Length: 247
Image 1 (cartoon, rainbow, N blue to C red):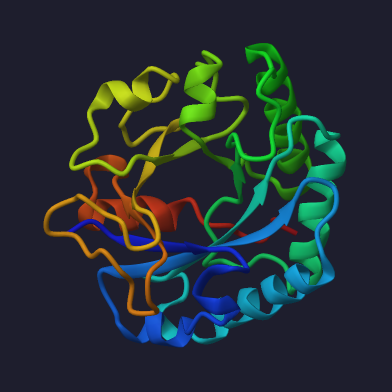
Image 2 (image 1 turned 90 degrees about the horizontal axis):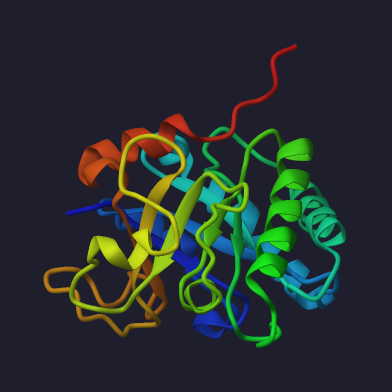
């Protein structure tokens, strides 16, 4: 089975995810991605939720962290707001919560339709996401991953927008290559590449043989499929984790 990663925001699991239980379950559960920020303003309670769980996602992992357990954070991008201010908000909150460690996969940026303008043009989306990605690269040293599907498809976006991996949602029994190729991505072991398939949304899954719920309860679940999935996906993910800058 491919490695599985859960992703959460404040409202999931009544706001109290049992991350230690997820870690203790062992394979195929190999990590978690937490929502950090949205737009240029995010409630203090949400920031507190993120900070507490960001620390726990490392401390609860003990010997697994950076070996076969990975952590990441994502920002929900608002196309009608300043992308640089959004990136700065995201970077500030992660730093305030303890910063990045050597078991942390690339930061993610979520680009969906909810809360975003329906009249946004293809070029507007590309420009905003690309500006956000460049700011993350400049401050963090790595390009982010891009989470997106329908909103990008509907606007004809085929650019990777400065991002290095695609995290793709599709709640169907299979993942035909055309679904992600039509927005400009491919399955390979080189960047840019398709990294993960979010096949399960809050316990709703049609993928045979894969869990419909996590050890914590119903939440979104992603299969890491880069480089053919399986152990190679773990190796690839580990190789792209954050490393402290050289002195």
